[in-house]
Length: 218
Image (cartoon, rainbow, N blue to C red; front, side, top):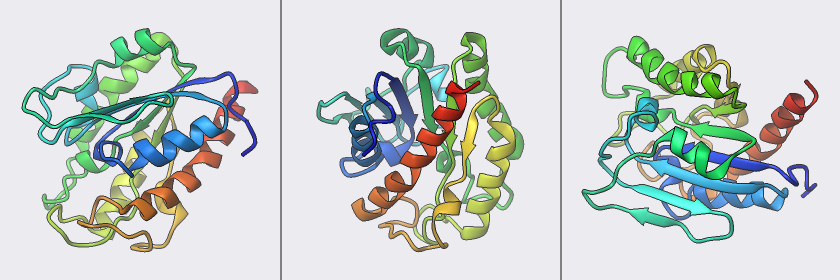
């Protein structure tokens, strides 16, 4: 590790890919910390980006991990998403990393819900614009086809390509560029095994560092 992020405070918010032990809340969180950053990770399972502006109940739990602490989860019917404004106020980050993709892909629908995705994304990015907060948006991986979420490679690529056009002012990371379709194992088509999440985190970390360095040079 290079220590490239020493002195930076990073806030990471995400969907179900961050909510379980062994997911990105383990691997990406740890890798960013090893680069020297102070990291706080929050996740809300099964909701779109708009739920981070207007908090609401979530169907499959939330999780929080701050610094070197353990992952704290809430899988009860009291679980609610988080307010991005409150999290920014609490942690005073230099940059926010957003990992919200698969929850907005409409994989069970014939057509991808483009207008709804746009509305969800802009609800959140408007908050970043209001505070001039630098941000990076992490797109979805290929996953594997089939399973209870009906994810397909075609829809994963369509979603990733569309998000890339919608998340400004956030920089975008195309996670489909890191592997061949289906190369990283999942246990349900959408959520990776721990090995898959480790691969994803190893691919994301240098991209995040490069983007942060480009922001610093502006």
